[in-house]
Amino acid sequence: MPKLPILSGEKVIKILEKGFDFEFVSQKGSHIKLRKIVNGKTIATIVPNHKELATGTIKCVLELWKIDTENFVNYHYRNK
Image (cartoon, rainbow, N blue to C red; front, side):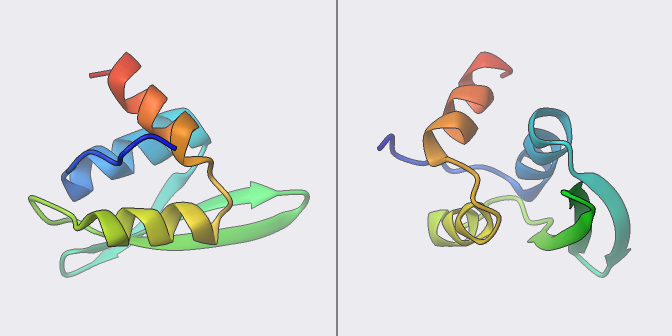
């Protein structure tokens, strides 16, 4: 499994939107809500829009929605 890079909330949001079909729903303070429809069901996630996210925070977002870490990291490096 590749090591997660240190990313900003803004970068994680862009990757989720462009690479994994999430869409912006709303923002409350520094937290941004994203959603995606899978098999007719809406799933949502919250990403803190901070300058630097802890790798544990990124890992939780990926695990929660079953996004493969390797695909996420590869998408990040392909689209820098």
